[in-house]
Image 1 (cartoon, helix red, strand yellow):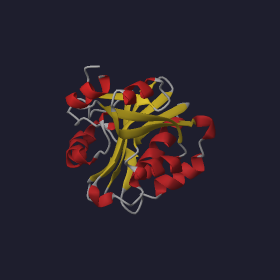
Image 2: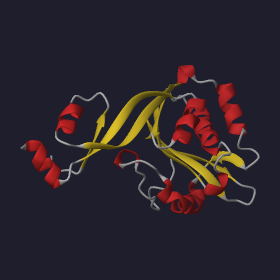
Image 3: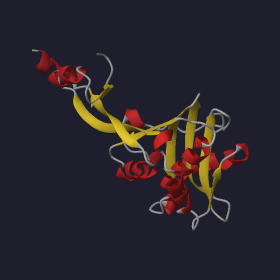
Length: 204
C-alpha cells in the first residue's frame, strides 16, 4: 500500500495482514442505527425538552447559515479521532440546508446557536453528518436534544432508519446516541502505516 492510513471494520480479514506488516491502530470509531419501529417518541420528546433551560430547539433554515458557520468555526478543532471521524470545515455551500440535508439546533434567548446536528437524507434513510455543541453548552445534554429533535421530525415524515457514528475517543456522543435509542452495530479501526525503516524490517 502507498497510503499512510487505512480504515477497516474490526472484523475485516485484511486487519491481520496489515498488523503483520507493522501497521498500527491509531484510532477507533463506530457506527450505530436506530430503526423507526423501535423509536420511543415520548422519550425522544423528553430528551428534546432537556435543552429548554438553555434555549429553543428547532429546525435550522437558510436564515441560520451565518450562525451555523460561526459555530462550526468556533468548534472545528474539537472533533476527536482520526480520518474516519474527521469533520471538514463547513463552507457557505455545505452549510446550506434543504430537503435532503436537514439541520436542527439549540438557539439561546440571545440568538446564539449553541448546538447543532446535520442529517443527510437518502430516500427513507437518514445519516447524521455531524453533531457539535459550543463549549459553553457542553454538559447540558444539548447533543442529545438536537439528535432527538432530528429523529422526531424525520419520523413524522416517514424516515424508517437512522444512521450515525463517531470516534471511540468521544464517550459523550456515544452516550447521547444510546439515550436517543441508537444501537452500535459496527466498529472501525484506523491504521497508520509503519515508518519506512520499520516496513523494511518487517518485510526482511
